[in-house]
Length: 194
Image (cartoon, rainbow, N blue to C red; front, top):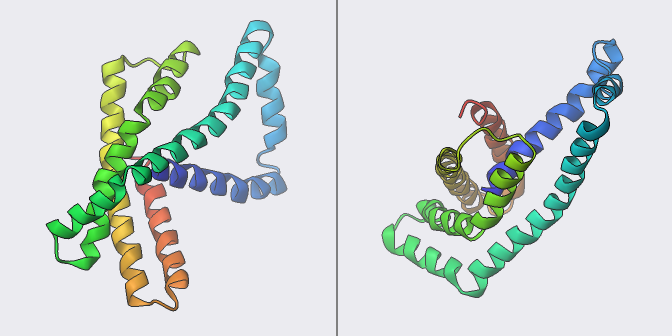
């Protein structure tokens, strides 16, 4: 799931960066004034709680990166990744399908490795700050749906990228960038619906 979240966050950030100057230039939206107006509504304990949530979120970015790297290290260190590739090669003789099949166990096992961290950051922390109205079972069901969608999308993406690399070994970076951009736009258009 980290790759899917990366695409989602990257797209949202790109949209904000590209849209903010246009709104500000036309006088239609001033992000600084809107932020100041919102922060002025928060006083006392509410302001302290808001600050604690966001400052803690900065640390979560750092520790989330450490957890993700650790998960990848575990998959590589114990040679699970190579076993997933061998399994994918046994399942199909079509080379273009191997990366997609490989992605499925890699993503699922990787998500299970980081599950305790995901439960803390996505459920318990959100509940502690009053941002979660789902039960644990409901939240877990939504996470499973997100994992299924991410697994399918990443498998498709990897099949396309590796097909591009094989088809154009000298210009794969150019065609791969175009394919990644198209995939990112598709993900941004479809992800919010799901």
